[in-house]
Length: 78
Image (cartoon, rainbow, N blue to C red; front, side, top):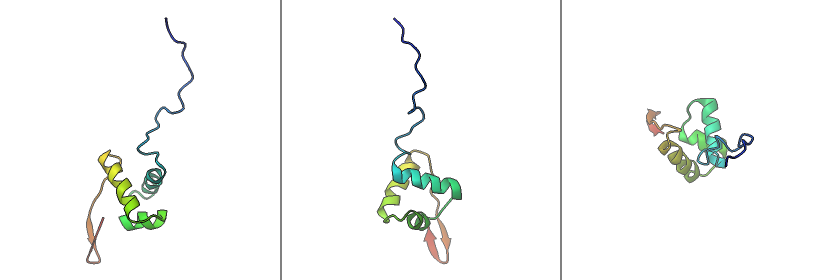
């Protein structure tokens, strides 16, 4: 018995990790900007500090984003 080929599944390529609303917004911002400081992401998306931190951690762990640290105006920036 064989199955009849079906139309392409519309969820092919859909990654639940990335497509959570705030993670998708972070990815869109980073795709446009290339890189952004943590505070900028928080401000641009209108989120509390814990939200982008949690989602950035998930994106970094999955290899979708990278985190760097730099010193600017005597303060460490992420």
